[in-house]
Structure formats: C-alpha cells, structure tokens
Image (cartoon, rainbow, N blue to C red):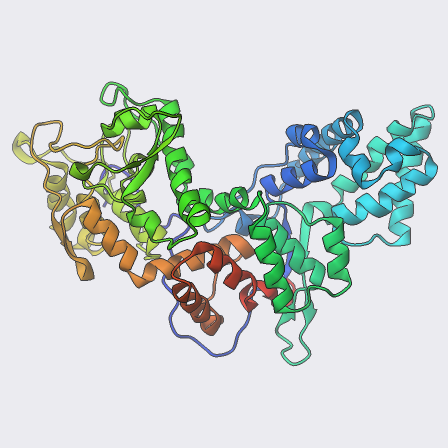
Length: 532
C-alpha cells in the first residue's frame, strides 16, 4: 500500500549492497554504447565551436536501471534516431562552416587552402578525432568521395563538399557509438583490458564530459596509457580541468533525480513557482560543488552539513533574512532542525504530492538513493488513494499512515522501512517550509524508531544516522559504477573488486574526488568481459 502514490518500488538506483560472492572476477560484457546527449553536444562544441553545439540536437537518452548510460548501452535504438542524427549533423555542419575558427584550429586548411587535398586532411584528421581511431585508407577515400560529389553538385563550392563530408563523419556509428571491446587477457580469457584509446575515451567522457583530444588519442595509441599509474596521472589532471565539476554534476543529476520535482497546489503553497524549483535545485548543486570541489572534503557533509546556500526565494521559504548577493552561504536555522541535503527543499518537494506530504515517498527515496535498500513494489491491485480518517476524526498524516500502513501486516512488511524515516521529516511541508502543525491544526510529532537507527526525532538525527550508515558509502560507489561504465555492479562476480573500492572510499575519508580516482584505476573500470 502507498500514501497516495505507487512509488514503493524500484526507482532505478536501489539495489542490495554487495555481499561476499565468488572469488572469480568476471566483468560485464564489452560492446558499444551511444554517446549521451551532453557528451555528444560537448564533443561537437570541442570540434566545431559553441555555435555548432548550440544547434546540435541528438536523440533523447533512454534510461534503464536509473541511468541513461545503461540505457544507451542496452536498449536498441528506434529507426527514428537515424533521422534525428541526420538533422542534427546537417545543422552542425552549417554552423561549423559559418563559424570556421574552431574547425580551422584542428584542420587549418579549411581556411588556408580549401582545395581537394584539404578534403583528405579533414577525413584523416577530423575523422581520427571524431571516430576516436585512425581511419583506414579505404575509409578516407569513401569520405573524400562524398565531399567531391557534393562539391560537384554545388557547382565547385568547396564548402558544399565540406558540409557533406562533415555530415558523413558525424553520422558514422564510429562517432555516435563508443567502442569498448578491449583486448583479451592471455592469462584470464574471460577478461578483456580496454585499449589505451578506449581507456582515455571512457575517462574523458566521464570526467570532462566530452571525447578526448586528438593529442590524447595519439598518445594513447602510442601506448602511453597502458599502465594504471599513467591512468591515475591523467585522471587527476582531468579533475583539475574546469569542465570536471559540470561532468560530475551529470552523475548527480541522475542519482538524485531532482528534475522530477512535481508542481504544487498554489492555493496551498503560495510561494510555489517554477523559479523557486530552479532555486531548490541550484541550492543542492551549490552544496555538492562546495563539498566535492571547493572543500574537497568528506562527502557525508553533503548529508549532514549545518550550512547551505540561499537566494532571495529560498530565504523567504526557509524564513531567513534576504541574502546580500544573488547567492550566499548561510547557517541553517537551528530552530528548524535542518541538516544537509535531506532537509533541502529540493528533496522534500520532490518526494511530496501536489497537495501535501508523503511519508512513503520520502522514506523510499532515502532507502533507495542512499542506502541501496531494495523495497518491493506494491501489489498491482493496491489502491494508492488514502482513505478518509475513520468517523471523520481529525488525524495527522502520521497517524493515518500508522493506521493504514503499519497496523496491517501485509503493508507493514514494506512500509515499516519507509514511513518511519518519513515521519522524522514531517516538520517540513510539501514545499520544504518549516511547520509545527498540520493544516488541520494538529501538532506534528517527528519522533520515531527505526531498526539500528534507534530513536530518531528530527531531520538532524536522521541525517546523522544516514551519514554514519556503512551502506551509504557502498551505495554511492554502486551508483558511480552504474553511471561511469553503463552497467550494473555484480556483487557475485565482482565481489572482491567492489569490496576494495568500498574500502578505498572509506580510507580516503569519503572524499568524492578520491573515489573517482580509485574507480577509474580499478579493474571495474579498465576491464570488460567478452564483447556482446
């Protein structure tokens, strides 16, 4: 049963924590996966400039198990994707020719000597960059022939040929898909080590959000990234790149799923606006960036920090003085028992209804997103609508949940792991504002008990318990693996490697940048199984 919704099931990021399994490491199959939309756009911008990136419109990514990287690896694309990619490539080529400086920085001849020989140079140089490998002579010839045919059709115009040469390069599966097949380990035939170019491509896409440079590709082809030490050096350099925070934020956008904040009833929540929702998401992003990049500190501070960032809209919602700047770092109000992300308006509003709170959604979100505790979905015949209080007796939401969910054994099996965590957040309404009583005037009681947490009486208590739960670090690791390599972790076939990564995160005092380094230098990242 559910309190007005049927979200008590898998939301994509929940999974049991890894337990001891077999000793034999078997990585997930190698293969190909489509560039994610932001990776496609960023790579286009790198090759052709911001004007081309602005008109690039790749097909929408498809999510599976909570991550588009998994969806783009496993879901077969529809036929309509071809037309979408073609339309995007034509727009990109037009923008690249109209604004040639970025392209000319890679292939100077498009400005200096626009002739037939330049078509060959474009195919060899830009093709190498776009396809992330050198083109064969036959491939170069095929690309150049398209350019020459288009030039003839365009009455000898060099740019007419260049346009369709660029389109041909962009429409190739070698650009749209990332190849991760590796080379077989002679001693472990079920394991395939990613090649140097495959490693730097996977690394670049994860840490800076676009394909690698031509210089980096050639260096990898020369064998300069065939050791774990060289991969670590490159990864640390990439984390110092200005693009790294934005790329890592792509992970958290999917992990936290804050784009799913539902609208609120303006009659009940007059402060609600789309602008306020944008501010909610930005608050969470600013705290993440402060913990991960500015402070480079324990990620658990994101869960239980005593400070946050507010603009004028959030200050009004939280009952704080208006900030002096567009955004100010402020201490959380002590009288509201707020602590870290779990008391951000973003997560509170996301896990509420149009008209009111949802203890089930809030508890489910915490269990799945931060503790990787899998809760079964409700029975298909469950009625998601809450009943009216018996005898029209006024009740708090908590009292109603206890009556409907926790006093019925078949419901309590699942709801006992969700609703109590939600009870501790009842002091925040569906928009995230502090309150001490229900709309019907009844006082709110946030004190409850849950499993090993014991008695918890506020968001501060809840945050402290979640932050200290060993499952938190493991859950973050699991989700980073899913996003970073486009496949689920396997607690049985990857047990030792997972445990090593969990321990590494803990040893690094849960610094997220160090988790990234440990992940990209692990066999979990550097190896694949037999290509599918």
